[in-house]
Length: 128
Image 1: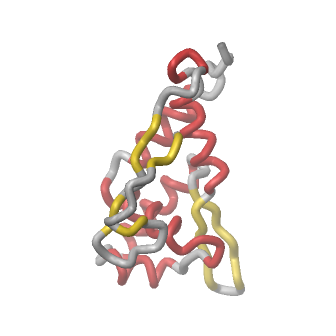
Image 2: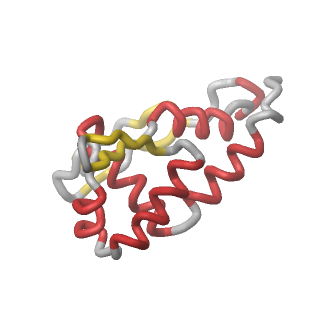
Image 3: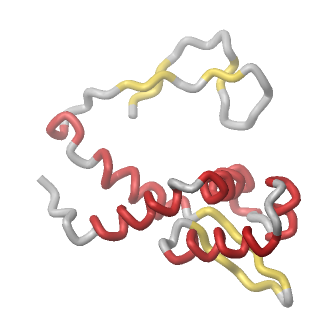
């Protein structure tokens, strides 16, 4: 059994940040953007969120380290902090099935050409 009590307050904060639809959408958009990241103006127009609201949501995600910010001159570029998200998921799944590999999730099926999606005719599953 792993001692994860020190991480618990951060996990609660991170889950709380993601429990708001605009922040969840921002994080997902940054995941899709990958290492290229996005500028706030691009995110605001793509999500239909006013710039001042987006700024608030970005600050919340930054505070729990789910995203990173890089200054480029007068611009700020944001990226998803995948390592931190993996830590969050790891915390949630750390003691799943008493450490045994027991959970198999199907690969998401897509009807579009979305990146990361498997064609609807594929029937493989991925071990979580």
